[in-house]
Image 1 (cartoon, rainbow, N blue to C red):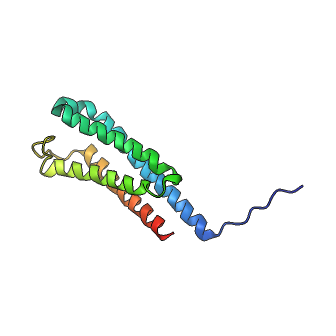
Image 2 (tube, rainbow, N blue to C red; image 1 turned 90 degrees about the vertical axis):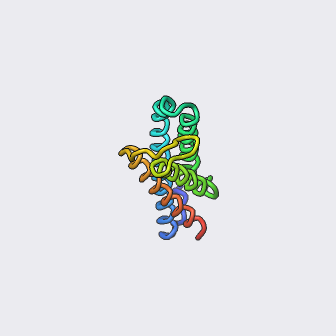
Image 3 (cartoon, one colour; image 1 turned 30 degrees about the vertical axis):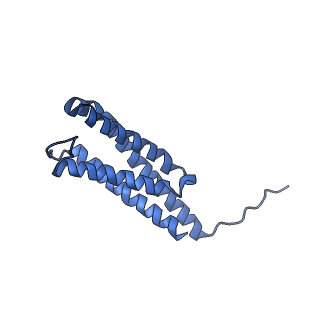
Length: 141
């Protein structure tokens, strides 16, 4: 008895699935890395700015961790890329605002750029672009 035959998958579908997987892994890694950075910074920001600032970092870490879990699964393909793109953009814009004009109730004065924040924000923006590409690929199908 022979092995059952499996019909070949056209090359155009293999490339798209592989590309989607790479994008999902990249966005997942960005979200997980940023979640780790934000979680590590909860305590220093709690000491510096009190409960509101510490809570903002905790909420960012939780949102990024959930986003990483959601975007990783292809079954969440309809909503996860949009949600992740929004979360990453919101957090990146929050950092940029904190460094330029401040954020009312959290950071009254603009702070200086720091290397960790700048690299994390650049990664978040790259992840947001990858999330937008994932969304556009889903719309074309």
